[in-house]
Length: 227
Figure 1: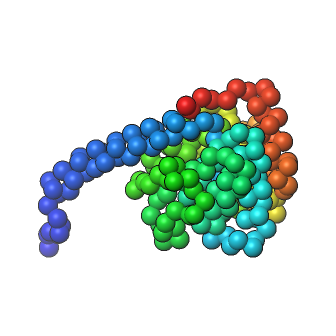
Figure 2: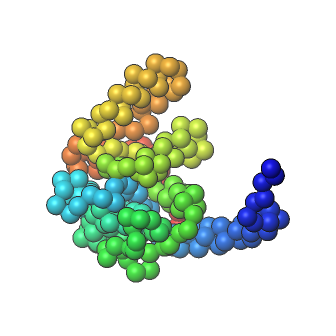
Figure 3: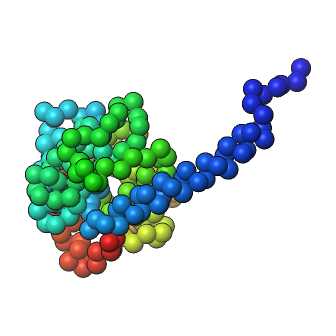
């Protein structure tokens, strides 16, 4: 029995070709919007973290301190840790940027995003390019698959020298312990990464430690202009 697909394959190929223009428009919109913003730091973490959680409070504090130092704060624009990042940015008087995408747990932008810095994306990969291109550093709080995706994108690009080295700091040693142990005891042992790759990031517990790590990094490294 022959299989008859429900759609004409020529129509599918044509739709794929036209999608390129939509992808290009998202890149153009993202680049033009972000180019007007000064040096910024991305704050990653779960959309499901509630406002009374310790990690939510840490995200607010870290983002406020970053804003007080002149950094904008970039988040995925949704609830949870992302909301906390944008809230802290506004409390610190800094630029509060949201890179939104329509997801089950992130239906709309949170209330703490600056009105002129609330960008909306349809494509994950475009959104991730904008995150990486316009961030001077990455602060990673506990999260799920999306957080891991963003984290390992940044780590891979720095490891392979596709982008300049930037500080990546994990918040919460208890949360990240299993992953860090697996990287050390399995990935390095199997020879899949080098031992020196552990120097691509730092794990801390306190907000002040995260800020110090970023401050110390830029005592010996230049900010990558994005404006």
